[in-house]
Image (cartoon, rainbow, N blue to C red; front, top):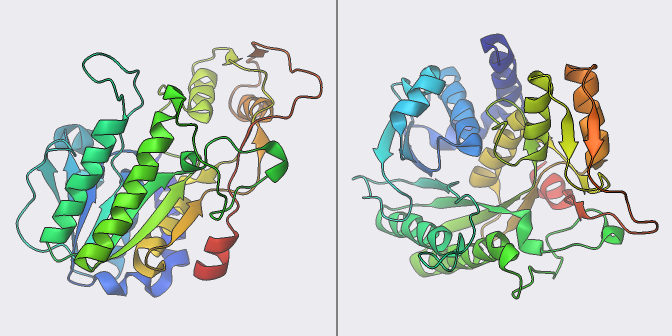
Length: 325
């Protein structure tokens, strides 16, 4: 990515957020997971707004490796308004002072169950959420944002199309592969319970799929893998039949949505975050090839079953549009 491209994205964020930032004037914000893909974009938006509006706000990022973040994003890691707490989200020592605003954007990578960790991702994800909620309870938090996932809905029938927040589906509790969605469901419940008990306002953002600068190109995200393969001149390999439908929101827009939800979302409310415009995985691969590497090829591992409905992972975003603009 180029600095010019990031500068364009920052201007887009500032144009679309307007006076949103005034609530942060002189305040401190704590972000768990502040150096991952989602967290980095939260910090990009914050740093740009903090400078433009002279907010005098400060953000503290929880991370395992601040030096790595400074190397990758020196303009953020060396910003005087940005500081770090080094630690794991499940066990970190809470920094001193109050944090009127807290964002929990840390999440565990999915990993298989083992005798050492039979609950896989579930237990560390649950413990991390509880630890960040304890910080909010102890440090005078007023507004709390949790970045959950569309995985809380479980499998969604293709005829439904975009899934709304009122959908009553859920992951299959007998499927160990549903551990990520189950952990997010428990974390959502924890957020609303702590908020009620300790008197702060919690908002839940159910994240779907995204694309843009800072997205890892080798960590299992389809669009990231496709882009990485195309840039390297490799063939793009689709593991399934290519019919599954997904949607992708651009990263700068993700930052706009999340800061808006933290500062203006209705307390106790869950909002889908993503694009409502679906694309098949095969169409996505073809688009990446046409854009980045026209000489690359696309291979599909399986033939589509005649008459089979494609799997769908696309949000209905009407609630966010209606309530938050």
